[in-house]
Image: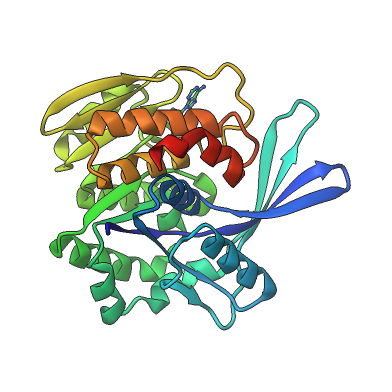
Length: 309
Ligand code: ADP
């Protein structure tokens, strides 16, 4: 069975259902990726690497992970911290805005739990996936330890996969984020950037600029998400451009890139070509954005994607 480790933070999500009522669920970029990956490829062992607390919300969060058949062996339990929280507000024009309470979350302490023994266990994985949000969540004093862990995994033959997901609020300065992202680019075998995210942090803002920027790195697969237009794939076999069929009625773009990553990484681990994996990823992301929230209800999802199971 293929084995993937996804490193990051899952948060408590609050979303208004009416002016005085909020619905509570759980979400976070690598968690979203893990959910879609497992739903599409149940024969893959999908492990979350994160930290939660010992409170009621943490219990429910871990139960939610288990309900989605995610492995929780590497979900560590802080004795003193609790999960991060965010709320989504909709204004009168339907525009979404986010408020976060995550500065002191349990997930920020995850590196405290990763010792030599755990690193050895993570070295048995096929892929280790993390994002720019995961990097922003690692406390600055733990960054050296994180990169040391990545170096050990890479030396053991684990493929490192990265999506940059730049969120300015997670960083003291843009330069600090850039420095961490450059380390991620150097370490990565599979790069999954979105053009918009890339433009927000580096000066290049079109697809060709993104591709030439990455020429200096030794990736195996570069898959650049270009929104509703297309996806550029570069690897040792050359360049391929896969078109996206634009969705007419976009309901909520939350999790578009995350669900794409889940479909892509799962398909690659299942032995599909890069092009075929991107085609599936496009279909998954195109479906997810026609539904509200990060995680589409499981029965609706499986009735659409049963043929892949
Ligand atoms: P993110 O900013 O979350 O990374 P992107 O805008 O890069 O999201 O989109 C991720 C993926 O979602 C795209 O590669 C594509 O597969 C799909 N996608 C995004 N927007 C649309 C759209 N309007 N119609 C169809 N698919 C879309």
